[in-house]
Image (cartoon, rainbow, N blue to C red):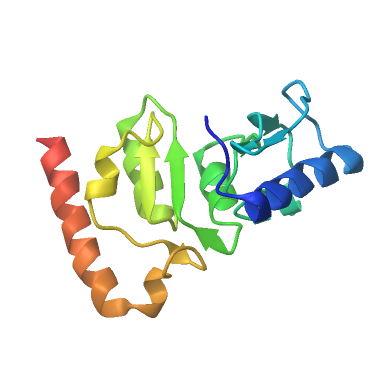
Length: 161
């Protein structure tokens, strides 16, 4: 973890955290002081649990070291929760069932869906678009989206072999 991009982002992320704490959202990590200094704007990783799907923490792209955990009963509810936002840049699913993993990849509206891990670095060399209001929004650039979707199918085949 490092500092956020600048003072404006630092203030934005800090306000999300403070607002959630003031509203009584369950904080799963120890609350720590922020470290604003001339060398950077560091915010300690912060995890909230049991977050309602309509809460601002669940609905917004915070772009800071803030994780929001919302339990799901099964894969159907997990997919529903993942799609219950106006954004769709990245998602992840953790499962031992490869059928559930590929179902989630197909049904979650996100530019990238990780399976059993987060970003590794290789994905940044592959083309992808965010969905909905994330990134450039795949729905607003249909010709690019179609090309990327074809590449996605080739990538799936590559990893299945």
